[in-house]
Image 1 (cartoon, rainbow, N blue to C red):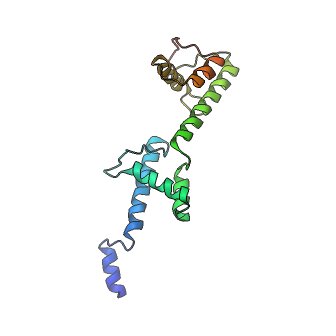
Image 2: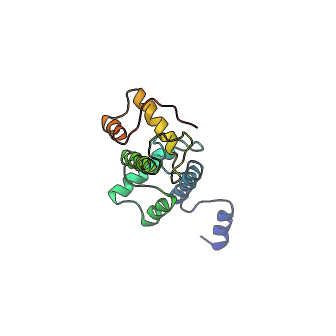
Image 3: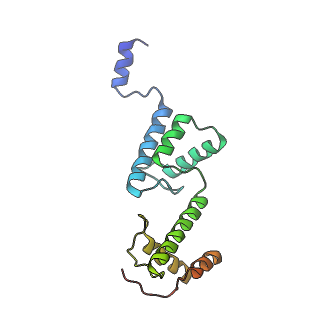
Length: 162
């Protein structure tokens, strides 16, 4: 292709690598999601600007697991904050982190009556504990988590200050 024609096509918006352009567009959508939500744990059915972003990210994770994700793409996703392990593993790690923050709060304050709006190390610990109590009230909190919270002194029916 003559350089002047290539330049004209480029100026008209022709993508020389349409798959690469599409991947880059979805990465921009992921970055927008991350900026808005503070994480890259996109629900699998989530759509962003009409694009099935959650499904796309699941595909990227699957490619990573198979060793089929290009190094530059993997690096871009890691830089965006993508974690490669399963959503369940990340949820478990998040619960364990907040439980550890609750233990630190108790060690410092002498109790587990965390105010609803209290944040600990940038984490909304008070709201998390409210959520744990609500889940327990519905009978949906796993027995091992009930036990862990009771062992550190959590009372299930308590009114805590906002």
